[in-house]
Image 1 (cartoon, rainbow over the protein chains, first blue to last red):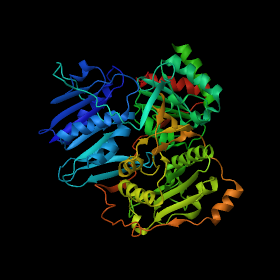
Image 2 (image 1 turned 30 degrees about the vertical axis):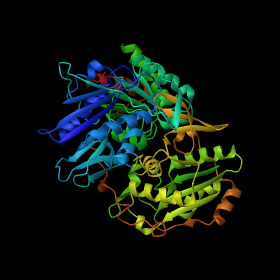
Image 3 (image 1 turned 45 degrees about the vertical axis):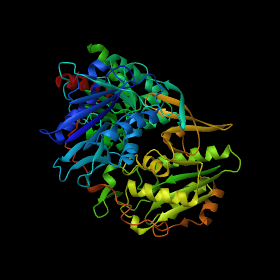
Image 4 (image 1 turned 30 degrees about the horizontal axis):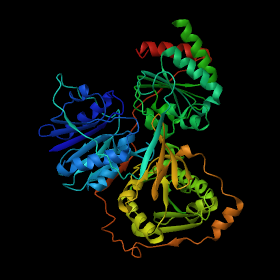
Length: 318
Length: 264
């Protein structure tokens, strides 16, 4: 069986969440699987240590990489190589490229896979969440049809890098000269302070915070705990906080050790982004708020009052 | 400029989790009570973006296109009440279990039949199955390039200038037409229908085509991927509610609980 992983790293760094892809691939067939990796951008030294049989690398020179060029490169690559599985992970490039490649190359396509339900090659099945995150569906694929899967981040363990650097074959990006659109400029607006997907602790505010002022306390508590600041869609849409702080289906997907929520009710699309947190602690005035069902500790209290008391008590104990 | 917006009728996504049920015959998540379906939220953002764009260009028309079974007339006419010009559907009982592939195929035929359009808008994904695939499949079937999660679009001379949302920022893009665009909540709230709009929409006739009229066979809408089962995942989590005499007392207790469990 042959599997291809396609990984994007726009900067010269290495996001080790891509190592989840290899745990997933090995869950499909432990014994007899040949893994090829095709990486776009990222730190070559790390990529050369990926646990794969063949390794290809395409350098990305700037921030304004056009998806059309990447599409063309992958399309040409797949002209010469056929795989049983092609695995992407959820990111801006994959969200665009995976469904298009599935049509161009006649692969079946399942996005947001969180689990393999049956790895019998005769009758392979995968689980993905639907309807926000409120339900799950089991999906099968026509026999012998090659499959493109986009897996969810934080759903699988990370495979280890191998200790030595192995050879990488470098490929050039195929530049499409007749592109229908060009990227004039890319503007990055990273939230201030610690980044959401890197922090061990995240403090988030929602509708119950009541306004921009409420987020000052969220930020103070976050600073005290060396935490990142998150928010629900209601808070972002009310412009109490930057869109870069959004946690949820259309924002960041996080998995901190501690996720503290203030005035967040727990709409399914928010849970999508935070349900992989190891410990959720929620403060809400409504004892029936859905977020409590997913929390380790819950407190029914006015969140704006509670957060001030909590800040004060933490200052006393530290 | 001829513009169309693809919309989908979906179960109301604001219904709380404990008021949902699974329709195991048709494999759908539905509200327990008889709550009216809605137009997918992101599709209404797409309608808003399309209407804004059409208002900036003389002689523009906005057509609404939808695929489904037993569509609710009042629901799918909402974009007409918001200001769109016409509504074209393929409402056919054979569409009952249609998935992303079939939907994209039927949309592509409707678009070919009633187009060509200069720009095709749609929501970034539908809130029922969250596949985010139909606009991309449409792009391949129609050979029209796609830009996803667009926030603004304007015409400058012959050029189309767009702002596209990416993780941690946005991109400024120059594009040619025709083009497919997907939109999300970044567009801003969809406008409320005016009373005049609602009156107009109630009189507007839906132009419907059956699968037969579009010359699409049941085999053609069959997908390589099949939804086999749908269920609510079990939640085994047990929450410990922290009680206390007042807010301060609860804060003290929370800190000691977090320390005891080694979380902080």
